Image (cartoon, rainbow, N blue to C red; front, side):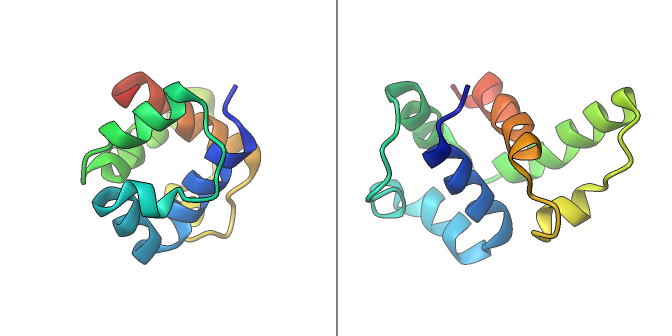
Length: 98
């Protein structure tokens, strides 16, 4: 289960393009002050520029299979970034980049 710190980082990256770019360009600066587990830090350090684009495809595929009606546009726009949604996104990231 992801820590609250990782959920906060991913939520912020989803809703704040400048922070998302900082996360990709300068990880240590972006995560300063957050307490992360080693595997979480590893996953974040392995993120590629297209990581959030991949989330778009993976989340939409999961939603269509599960019958969820929430669109990623809503999630990415910050209007529906709940801890359950972020946990799903973190699982996708951990599977690919962890």
